[in-house]
Image (tube, rainbow, N blue to C red):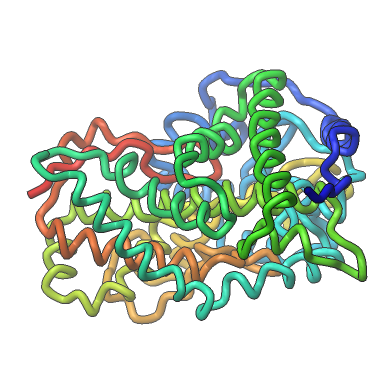
Length: 424
């Protein structure tokens, strides 16, 4: 048996103490009074349908502010979202999920989930480490298994006329893929779903509760990492354990943070994208019928679904007090980067609020902008394409069973959490 002292109990306690630093802000859960001055991206109204709110703000208050979460900003114009995404001088990525706790400044430039939480110059090498696993060639090796798995999920629907496409289909596809890539047990898939929801939702829960949830995730990851130390295999976890930066193996916080990122982001973004696409097709028979009749149009339609229903809103922290584009930002203010709002800006896209499944020019930003553009975009596209191809082949006729029963995640990754569809 080999021992890697990077993941000893003592080192783990040191790591957790570092992350428990920073400071907390007051938790505010009152209903939103004015979206321009008191917004909350986890408010039920926003979760149900944020687009009218974003359109209104873009006209009357393009950079909204709230005192919630200790102070946060919400730009809604494409040009502002893009400018902040590219500006690593004035904004840090050391924390990318808005909550009521700022992590300690000392976490920069690595952050808690490298490379997405990393600042330059560290970010460059941390991102470069992951690129080989997410090339088109590497991703293509996952397609056959993904397609077979999608068929098996639909096989399980036999004899039923109503299914929850979010919980029984969309959720499981990226879960299986990322578990296989990390070398984690497939039978733990239900745990992964709860880890995702605990990490990204319920951000207004008491800090003790959130810390307890994150501790469960860290404990699980440590079990998997220690198993890989004892039993190395050809997967991403073993790769990260052996990887080096500047001649040294990765720090334990780097390994844990990157696996955390791959597990959480790798599942929720695709789960949300597949669910949103099926939701649209269920309520839009003309688009559904056209894609069934013209399957070759799916890659184009898929990009439009990514534009209109982009799932991800990223975040930054302001480095120092400054006047930025007409507003006075304070050090440690949160700044949300709502890529969904940028994708619906009429200054950037013709007929921005419409879903045009044969849109020819579509430079959407569903995968982000700047140095943190999603490293897994090829994987996400493959999973989304295969999921829709198999569903439309096997279930060409489907509709919303009860539109009022559809629920959406109240977090920075928005997608259907329950999606009852009538099939057949």
